[in-house]
Every structure is written in structure tokens, then in C-alpha cells.
Image 1 (cartoon, rainbow, N blue to C red):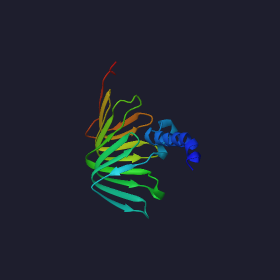
Image 2 (image 1 turned 90 degrees about the vertical axis):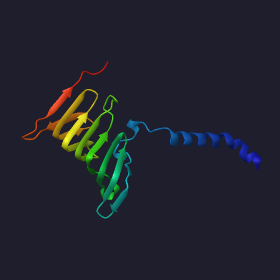
Image 3 (image 1 turned 60 degrees about the horizontal axis):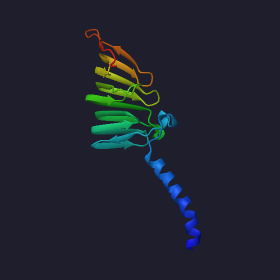
Image 4 (image 1 turned 135 degrees about the horizontal axis):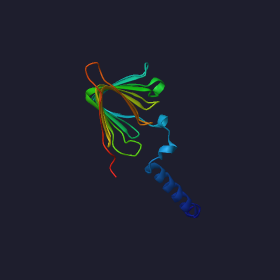
Length: 170
């Protein structure tokens, strides 16, 4: 019986090693589309309405998807057929962090945020601010396309938009 097992040991070991490497090594971003990324949620409490496809999370909520991390007091995720399509967050403030296209830090804060999973667009409402290595943008409403790295800022009749642009460090 040992004669039949010993010749197969190198093959079994190689298979186990390949399986271990696949489990440990991160997936390349290009190999996994944004739609395929899992959404990880931690919170003090959660309420799931499976029929409507709505999850409500409260208390120190942290949502992670790929390299985006969002922190809020309360988050509602709309996921019909268990596929997340939209997220609404409220907090004092809500905070989103994700590296920009050059892998530099960018932070967005506001009292309310909405995120479209399909488009990867953040909508910041009330006391909205986006900070990158080279920019600090403030307004009442900011739309931030995370894929294209495009920011659109709106003020109010009584509050103007404020932007500071810094030269990029060399």
C-alpha cells in the first residue's frame, strides 16, 4: 500500500502548495472586476430584510470593498438578489478612504454619503470635503468619480466652493 502512495507524494505536495499559494496571494486587480469584489461589513447591530434586499447597519459601521473603506454611524445597503447596487451612509461625519490613481491617499468626509457600486461614484452631501495629496476641495455637494478621479463641487446660495491646489511632491 505504501508503494502506491509514495510515488504520488510529489504530485500531492505540489497540488497542496499551489492551493496554499492561491489562497494566500492577493488577486491581481485586473483579474477581478469591481462587480466581483466582496463587500465586508462590521457594525454594532444589523437588520437584514432579505425580501426587499436591504441591510441596515448601525453603530461604528465599517464597510470595505476592494481598497475603499467607508466609516459611518449608520449605513443602508441596497442589494436586490444579494448584489449590492447602492449604499447610503450617515454620520458625524461619514468618512471614505481610497487611494487615488497614483496610489496616493484620498479622504472624503461629509454628513451624508451615497455610493453607487456599479459606477464607483461617491456623492457627498452637507459639509462635503475631499482631500488628496494635491487638493483640498470643500462644498455643500461633491460628486466624486473614483474610477476617473473626477470631482464636481457645488456650493449653496450662501456658501461658495473652496479649493486649494498644492504642487505635487517630487
